[in-house]
Length: 314
Image (cartoon, rainbow, N blue to C red; front, side, top):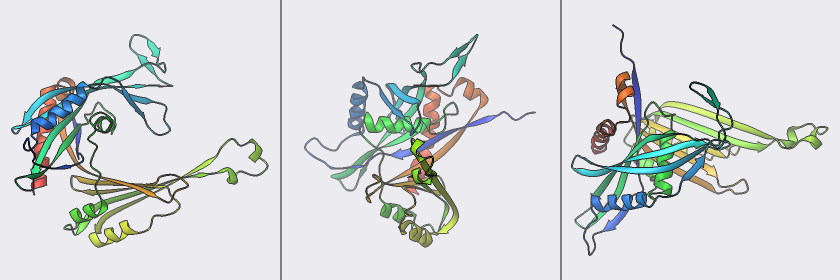
């Protein structure tokens, strides 16, 4: 008997920027307060937002956001359903009974992009506390890798105004200090340079533009913590303008991006994120009949959420 084919749903979990607060005249903020703020921002969303990948013509447009109220483990939360489409497509066609060439103004989209917003309130004592959201992204097999993550980040930044938390390098080092070795480390370097001087002088008067793109990738395994610390503190290679570092420790992933703000500046812009990567499997039948069903989506996200919360408490 043939084994039924299975598919993976990727569920990265992000943490939004944390807000420290003190209990005031009206008491401590509640989960309902946090969610009401989100709902009011979604209800106020009337105009489309769009973004493009670097050096690509295709544009992604987020056109509609709706929410479904949920309760998971006695905590109220929101499942967001997002409609988004691609447009400004220069080459492509759709074929059913006949072949139809896709025009630049046409829209190819989906109404089934899901993210879960789960509120968290942690108290340091009876009056001081911090609040934030966990963002669970539902990357089902019908979507391209990273597609829903980009949608989610644009929504939390541009619509909800609760950006993904940017953590600092000392915090990363503190969190992984207890680990004797880092299982996986990936570092990628990128550089772009003017290439006009590389063209023979007899052809240079005809040259319109020229550039050299340079990349370098290093992969390490089982690097001791002190060696990692030394490596991350070394001066950056002047031959490159951008550097991305990825540390993978079990389901946790740290992504650090560093780049020059502009070619004339020596100032560095550095951002870092911590992501909890989870994967849940579905069958062919679930893909065909359930993958975008609200109850099914919540069930899958809830299992990841439970795993995440248990992992954070370890």
